[in-house]
Length: 394
Ligand code: ADP
Image: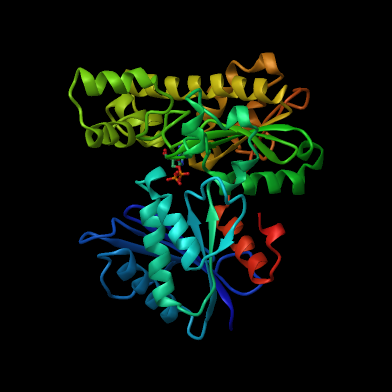
């Protein structure tokens, strides 16, 4: 066996990976190294979801974790070679509207973008460096969360700040692009009539955003300059009046680091409920604060779906994806409950069964559930770049 492709998604304290054999779209193995540091944990599964043993070894850093992952994969699949590595990278700036093969110049450019995503980009780059060290000869490909949104029209790309800030990169970049890219592809593959239409995709996981897609291209996204904007999330606040931040600094004397912590890790479902960032826990809780946190979450999604429909001049379909979007019938039901005015009508049995189409047969607007697959987007992009076929990689 030769020529496998490894996909890597390096987060602040995690390394998610998948290994694909040549020509296969189903992974041979997937896994997650979590809590990278002294308390690190590593879980690996084979293609059927059965657990695979992990090798001994430190998980103290991204580099150490990758070594441990590779040792485990070599033990499970002796002889399997890796011919390329595809990476998820949060920020590709204004230039990258498609995946790119990494070299020293691109790495330097991506490092310059780190201030735009200080909580994510440095970790993505640490994962790339670890992979280059492990596979110095293998092509390394970067796939950007921002790339899918580079088709935004200017009005959805800018803030109402003096123009110089836009020129310096203070823009609405949009994120979750690999997920939206996958969903756009699935719509084109399985529902071609919708592929030419206006679709709002709700990626609802720990991070959450909406994307308005018209004729396969991103028109608008609820996430903007950072992954904080738009919808409330597990621990992130979502849309916030900038005056709140001025107040926190001026009147409550909070430092940028304290505000960063508040907005990224203490807010959203966790902050509102005081119980958990996990939707399953909140759905099971009897506490009124849990119900209110879910109510705020679904209310903001409803509002933003309305805004997306306005931005696109109508709406033909809504697609739910991500851990919550794919699994929470309650959230889908609540979100759709007030959208009858735009032709949304759920069929409760289909929603309960997490069917692909969950709207009724007479509904004007189709509502779908499509499980996302960001790894497959990285895999395909990596393959396409290896074959010198960059255009289809986007
Ligand atoms: P990430 O953004 O970290 O990739 P996921 O897409 O895995 O996160 O989504 C995690 C969220 O999905 C959590 O809030 C979790 O509670 C929620 N979730 C997963 N399964 C269910 C379920 N059966 N019902 C409700 N929520 C669920």
